[in-house]
Image 1 (tube, rainbow, N blue to C red):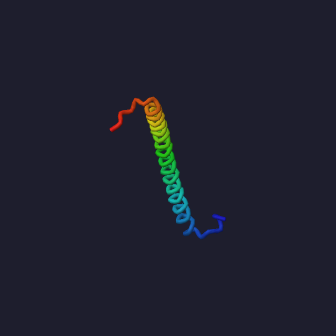
Image 2 (cartoon, rainbow, N blue to C red; image 1 turned 45 degrees about the vertical axis):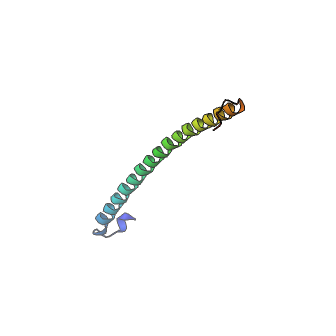
Image 3 (cartoon, rainbow, N blue to C red; image 1 turned 135 degrees about the horizontal axis):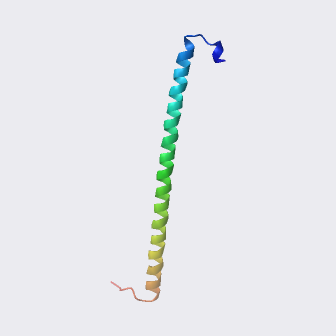
Amino acid sequence: MIEELNPEEKPNLIKEILELQEGLKALIQRTESVKNDHDQMQSGNQILQTYINNLMSSDVLSSANGSKKEG
């Protein structure tokens, strides 16, 4: 197909293809970066959820034992 193009069109088409490839590379890098950020945030959220669950569990245990001060 590219052989059928005008000699003037061929360099422009090649230039456009290279530009599109660079754009695609940039999008892939951005996607990987966002995925890494997401994974880090998800890990942090899991840690926070575990911490909250532990706090809630210890609070429930404290209340059940009557060791909580009434105010």
